[in-house]
Length: 276
Image 1 (cartoon, helix red, strand yellow):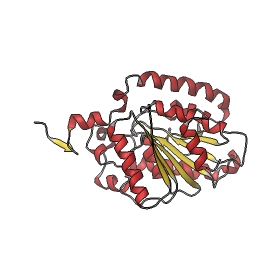
Image 2 (spheres, one colour):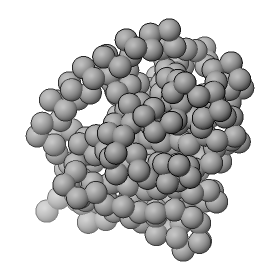
Image 3 (cartoon, one colour):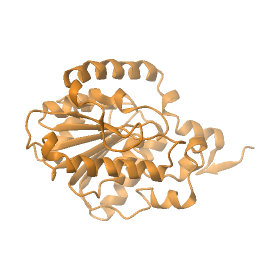
Image 4 (spheres, helix red, strand yellow):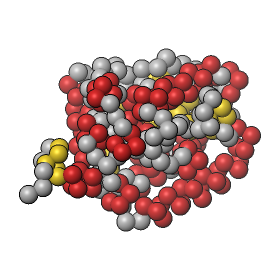
């Protein structure tokens, strides 16, 4: 009988329980579509792509202006379990927020194992600070920032919710407890330290009393659905404003189309949170 490593999972079961790419049969096709749509949108904003916020090569952000310098800023943080993917793939997501009157920043960061998770969180915090310092130059309201992220980006947006100027978060298919991650194949590159599991897990840290919409798809892996529900339940128990939503018919990748679409469910959630 195989040894159980976490919540009744064997090692193979736990690894499969967090393998989103293999869990979605057409994930490669969906990602290719993301790239193509991102390339098309980036051409319209070529002069404000790849702006720098730090010294490392991936310390860059894309800025998309909706044309209103007093509009709020929507900040998106990509996923990939902190060790793969890049911001360029997710530029297409700016379409929905732009159409709804948000300026948009799409943030990159150094990947593991080149950077520890502590360092990654620090980089994203730095990105928020730099963006806010450049609000007048870029043209957005520095006191109305809404952060969002998908998968590992959901973890990162929860991690920077407490930053000055940030008013709320839209966390999509996120990770909020690092304990199972530390016991899975994902830790080969992350190399999480015991203290990081505590200090960098939103579910184990002091909760931030700001609105948060926590969302995942009904066709997500059970562990991701569990993490989202448990984090939302924990926040609700503390009477912190926010919502939990399970989007029917969506998997880990297709759920993002609800943000790309100006009338999509995620776009509507963002507008509601921002009072639009």
